[in-house]
Every structure is written in structure tokens, then in C-alpha cells.
Amino acid sequence: MPIDQKYIQAIKNGDVVAFPTETVYGLGADAWNSEAIAKVFETKGRPSDNPLIVHVSDFDQINDFAAEIPEAAQLLIEEFWPGPLTLVFKKKPEVLDAVTAGLDTIAIRMPANEIALSLILETNPLVAPSANRSGAPSPTKASHIKADFGSSVLVIDGGSTQVGLESTVLDISGEQPMILRPGVIGKDQIEQVLNQTVLIDDKSSEKPKSPGQKYSHYKPKADVKWLDSEDEFEDTSSLFLLLNAETEQQNIINYTQDFEKLARELYDRFRQADLDGYKKVIIEPFDDRYDSSVIPALLNRIEKATSL
Ligand code: AMP
Ligand code: MG
Image 1 (tube, rainbow, N blue to C red):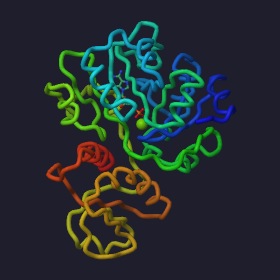
Image 2: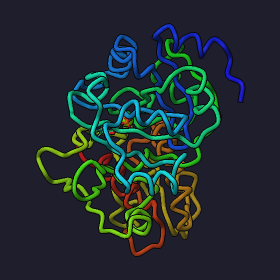
Image 3: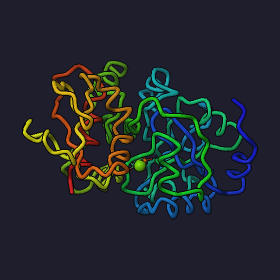
Image 4: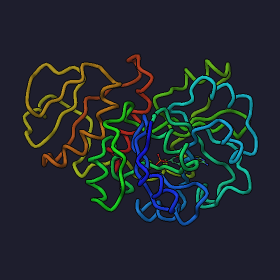
């Protein structure tokens, strides 16, 4: 897919450019340019101890960043790349410290989006954290980026993103693979490919292995909470996201147990709730009794949005 030269030049000049991926929009910068990377942290207001994911368009580029590619990684790459799975490798010494926030590992993925792949092909591997101000819901549409940054950030508009939640982050640098952040590619799918048990990072630990997981995230200004009782439906200042709605009301969105759709729309609903002046977003509780691989990721994002 041809990319307008102005975006390519901007990246080459060390500027940031927001672009679509299949998960959410990323704020892209050249992974080998430390000034460009500093702009990413500054633009987002991102804490400097929160490392970035490098996005590649070519399998060979992994070797520029990763010290070794374990066999497990090869199997997962064959199965899931390009796609919403980030792999954490031991890093090469040349990788810029600003990218990894001083860690000895590097997170890499290949996005499944033609615009993203073409932009990387024309430039370099790109760091691309979600293109929102730190703490706000990740952008799933170009208009979300305009809302956070005005016209100060160049945006390549690729419409709405397909997945709507950030990638699964899987650490394969240690003895046993460990999910650091749940995403649409679930534990079961990974275990099936590896024929091995996959651990899940203990979120209650003081020092999560994925530093980003300790920050408040994904929050609109409205309070996000789980639904306690149907009596709450009388509250017209709340937006309800329900799985099995029996009543029709303007402020009730019925997802009829379509969790992929809820994942795709969640951040847009959060942002739109603020624009529409709702005070709360109230979500019908669910758990992994339902058969959808996106549920752990949805629960993770909603739990974060409900916490203070
Ligand atoms: P974002 O790009 O905004 O979705 O955030 C990237 C996520 O990947 C954050 O939660 C980071 O903590 C995580 N991450 C990036 N690099 C590493 C790494 N080397 N080790 C562990 N987690 C990482
Ligand atoms: Mg983010």
C-alpha cells in the first residue's frame, strides 16, 4: 500500500507519526533514533520506565534487536505473525536504552495491517506505543488521536482498528513462557502451539514484569464500574454496556454476548461517553465461562478502568 511521502519523511526526520495497526493506533518513531524516541515519551507524557514495543515488517529485522530467537518464538511467529502477539526476547546490546527503559529484554511484534507494514518497509522498525496521552483509553480511530493531541501529531487514517485491544505480551526470554499482558491471542492458543504450559504474570506482585501494567490505563473521565443491580437502569446519567439487555433505552448498548465486538468498541464507548456527558459507564459483569479468547484481555482492561 503506497504511503504518502510526508509521513515517510516525518519518520526519517525523527518526528512521530500515528498510524493504524490491527490492535490500536500506534505513535510511531524510528527505533534507532533516540531523539525521536524521546519525542514519543514527551508527546504521550509516558513514564520513562515504561518500555516500548518495536514493530517490524520483516522477519530478519528481529535479529537486529533480539540476542537470540528461542525455538518457542519461531513456532509462535510462524503461527501468529503478522498479528496481535508481542514477544519479549533477550536484547542485543546495541538496542537503545530508551526503547527498553533500561531492561535487558526487548519486546517485538509484526502488526497485521497493510498501512503499518508499508510504513515500516519505507522507513525502519518503529517503536509504537498506543497513540493516546498516557492514562487515556488507547485510540481505535483517527479522531481519538485528534482529541488527545489536536493537529500537533500527524495521523495516517486507516479507519477503525479490527481488534480494539492492545496485543498479548508474551515473555519467551526465560525458562517458561509467561503472559505479561493478556490480549486477543489467549493462553490456550499459545499453549497449543508450544505444547507447553504458559504462566501468567502475577498482577498482584509489586514489580510486574511488564512495567506498563502497573500504571493506571484505559480510563475515560466517567467512572467505569460493574453493574450491581438492574435498579441502576433508571440513572440516565450513566451509559450501560450489557451482554443480555432486556430493555431498550438510548443509554443501553446491547452486545448480545459478542465479546469481540465489545473489545473492538470498548475504548470508543469510553471516549464517546465523555463527549456525551455521561458520568458513569456501567458494564454487565462476565467471566470466562463464556467461550471467547478475548475475555481475559477485556477483564484486564475493564478492571484497570474501574480501579482508581
Ligand atoms: P503500549 O505500547 O502502550 O501498549 O505498551 C507496551 C507494553 O509492553 C507495556 O505494558 C510495556 O510494559 C510492555 N513491554 C514493552 N517492552 C517490554 C519488555 N522488554 N519487557 C516486558 N514488557 C515490556
Ligand atoms: Mg498504551
